Image (cartoon, rainbow, N blue to C red):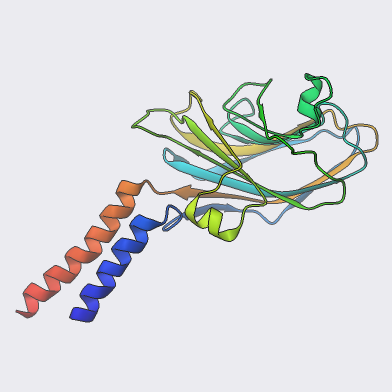
Length: 225
């Protein structure tokens, strides 16, 4: 029985110590998408159930050719004008001399916050991840973490984000994800794939899971006594 109690204690510590523990895979995409010059595309994926907790999206991405101002490829939450992250080349062409290519925004169809130094290189494989969640008992999603080539440990703990954004997304739930491309021209070819989505349990839910396991151990001890 001591061994079982120790197992419950270990489970409780593990659940409370890792934000990734207990994450539920919603979309495990293996499809690959190629977007050539003049072939802007969009797609949407309906989630198995509507989400109200944290949601982690990630995908792989590469390109050939030369990116031009405002070449755009982004993954979005809930709708094409919802929170999004991805490529918006050269700060969208809105800032003279800017070569930052990766952005995050809480919603809308213009602007965004760009990741400093994200001047992407043709022929390089990139792994992009975005985590949208609620803080301080917010009714709507109000925090966004973004990673470029995250390590397994960073995604496991949802730590070490390259960019953190806050603001009111206006969304209280998410039922769909997808991507869209715009302005791909001048011979550039984009390739994306491995689009994944995972629900992240709230810390309170994880704690309850651990307490339930511990409670089971207590009940078994009483029964044996």
